[in-house]
Image: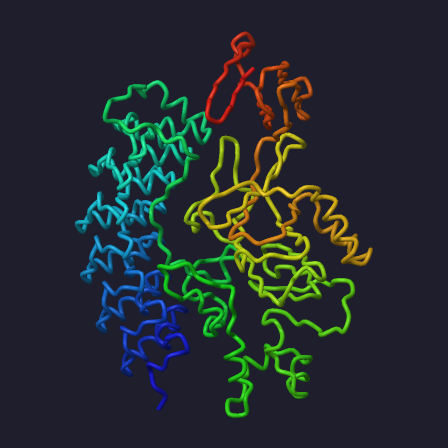
Length: 594
């Protein structure tokens, strides 16, 4: 007599579960017993949404036969066709379209399935959509067409297909950006060349007076400049707005914030509504991923203890699965009257009466830290470690730490020529939390530093929109003092051994929203004033920049980078012995090639 549409705390029904795990017989049995194919989870997803994203063809067919709506919307307005298009499931997309799915359905932010195909370079799905009458030039709320999106994300195959289908290469957004502006902003030189070959207008200006060339100049994309300079006319018309003198702000098209912020994303796993772990997300903490997908999700609060209290009460005895997850130590504490919920959900913390040396604990996404401090280590593949020294936390604080893909952020880290991400972006919470002492972050990276040729720098974003370099004076001395104070000598030796050369270690006194580890050409920075001075390279000591006395009117920071490369075989030496200088006045940036 169990109800077939029984809902979990967050609206998940047995049919959602069967759809996720592709249990076809179970799903068919539930449907035969009257289970509703229209049931929605907390974020508005129906079983068909899950089947479409997971490419469960048999279950999707059964759901549609039992009346599931192919145009069912999530809270943010995304349909199953949006999800199958983004994942590149062309057969699933064709099935949905055959059952009257709207190929031009717009989410609340205006994204259509074609936009998501453009974002992920899913040409095969785009062809299916066009076959069913999809519009290749549908704009979002901000005016971005699929060609804008493909240009922004550097998807060359999708760009060629859209242009072949007659997409307007000079379409502009609400703020005047063309696909060429987006490609130049992102530094996609090959995309710029494709657009120029297809008659993109290099002289088009944005609402604030920026050409594609100006944007590339401000962001320092040398290769993009080389492509745009020969075709851009430096002509100012009376009605043309003057170029903005402010610092350039990167703009990006709308994205699907059906972000599926599951714990599995931290280890690089799939981004699904349901993770492949048993249904942890049925507690409120995991169901943060199923919140309103049109808004930023707050993962800084954990309410799992509410469900634990219910499970451990006399009226609701714990299930077998919950008993298995409670350690013997916790079980004894429950019997003695101490609630399991007094402790962090991801770790077992022993209550000690004194503050001593730190010992490593593991965490999944979040952990609780108080005045005693803590040394936390990500127990998944991430390898992230956080060391909070004793007396650094002013009050008990739940800290969240997880990896996110750069494209999942509204404004990814701006990268100059020769720069690249050396790991995924690290998202922290609570945003703006301040500490009384230094907190050490250890993040593994995959950068190839080539000896001293390249270096690692840390960028931080306090609000998710603007990025700046994260600098702490005397950080190496601070790290050394904290590690010696917090760990026993044998633990410290093991820590250094595990770190090796692939760990980036830095200090912070507060938490931004994002940290990003960037690899770039080594830069020598010195402060030089009117008295003059010299900047020399540690990579090639013979490379020097000399500033005579009086060359500068005030004291400024001067940076010098040396990029080593081997000449191509068969090129005559006399053709290489030349110097070219590229000067961008706003940035005081010079590029010399010898």
